Image (cartoon, rainbow, N blue to C red; front, side, top):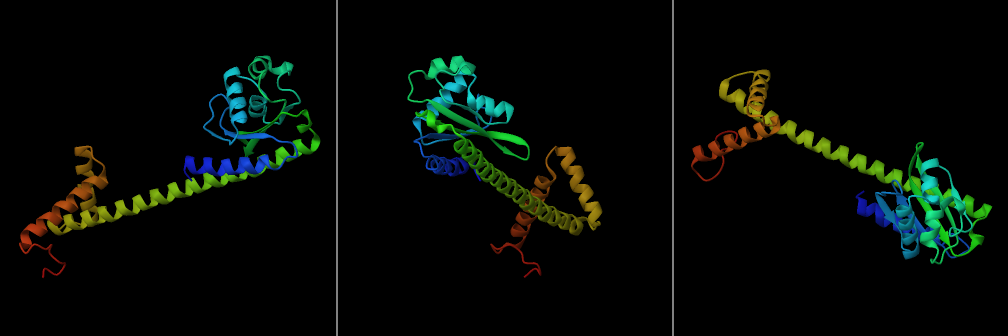
Length: 231
């Protein structure tokens, strides 16, 4: 899954999260360190502003959740003594409470789920438990996307390897027919040419095959490449 594809998925997830609370909330999902996130998904301008304020202030519940790997919360973000620099930056914003919890997979923190509200009622045991459950679900989504990306990369590498092998085998066949050598000797000739020209073995093989095809086309003189049996 591409980064843009994952962003779209997490944007939908953030909207689902917003609908999971009794109180109106603003939600953002951030992957990577809060000071320099790799991806942020939110449909809320307020959540985006609050994430940015924490990034600039270098502190806040999202930072705490990321560094400690545990849920951080406050009933009044604008007056919390733990984050005085942040409090100054959000003093005029319509926000009160906040819950930020780590998104973790296989023991590693991937990012944070951030929930903000204008009401202090947001922070209670049910909400804290709910945010934790939502973060686990998000972690599963992110992990699944990473696994899919790894599989796609592996598949692409396999296709490239198979294509390279086919071209190299063709080039070996050309050399064996031309010089009457063995497969091992033909491969050694390709390897020597690759090393001498400082060009990848596959590229040397491809050039040889293309050159042989051009010569066959020219020798035939009919406007069509030679067939296997020479007709």
